[in-house]
Length: 534
Image (tube, rainbow, N blue to C red; front, top):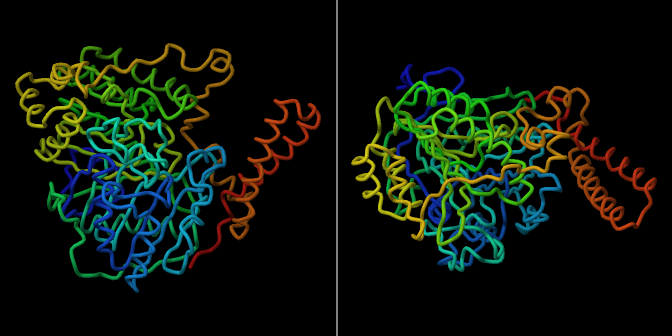
């Protein structure tokens, strides 16, 4: 039962609360992929995969099997006559194609009626479909920050010599990768399945019947059920899409949870660029003298351009917190065997009472522009399971046993003091202060435009209503998609030719104008007119 005093008791902080008969925290890609591989083998009726990206050649269990994700799914549908596999991935812009499969739906081999792959472009311009969700038979679900794509597999040791982490599809220079998924069983999985079906309907116009109940146990063998019969809330971010109301539940949840913090706010997140969250944390630090805030984030984002843009926001976020209580704030990066760990997780723990994990970064776009899913567990008092999860995460980062972390934290009465005591810079694993460049974006660009606002917008660049009023009909979906692809190719080719002196200035402007027209055709086709649905 939700307490009116808790964050989930506040309006707008969640969509639904359903029971999880069992739940387990899967830390890092190896644990998640192995659990998923085992669960997929038990699927009878339905496998739903939602993602930001996906690769057909992904190895779920690279230490023991060379079977790719595509081969596994084809094998499963051939073995089970009633099994349907549906994959729904964001139809990304061409400029974000680096590192992705060029034609992922073709890479899965011959698709058929029971194995369907859809690229979903049904989102306002400037937004992305960012959920990372797998639902099996509406009875078992995985929610968190891990896509089924390249570079996500790793073990908690993050050893640089792990050959499986350095395979071709990950690239030889891939940093160690840390992320988290929550596996849940029971009615909450069915509710997550409803969200998947809703996304599928918007993207395809196909209305799916509820998954027929099946007998049997989907829970993967060897995975301990750390929580049983626990209420789990589902929180969403969603712009207005095809008549579906916008939702900013994750943002409301973060703010409500922070304003109730008393002892510790522990955050792991890829980005830190939400001013409202920074202000809420700063206000709570000023009002609660015993509160500590510990944040673990990557030293750098993925790529120099992304790092420069997002660091402008991270610098402001960090400064806001430290101005409120420098001695009770630590923004840290994880180091492993001399390498910086790419902390890709998106989770928050407050006073060991509230735990949330999902796909939502602490970035403006994750609060209102992209589609996101988080799950939440909240108790009136500190919960030993949630505390154990936090100690396990911190133990990984400092290279110690969780019991040692727990004992020293209790002895010192401070999470910050414990982390600093155990963070030996000569050790294989430790946490170090986040150091950011004084001026991440070159001054001429910083003076001309707020690049952070453009790359990390708080609202869609072109709103859903405008696109609904003027957009191309949905039946021209393929035309819209190819307009976007052609526009991107022309734009890149012209810029390259212009730079190399291959075309003159006038010709360049003419072709760029034509490319822009194609881009606008694609953009205003992103939201179709609203067809009556039955």
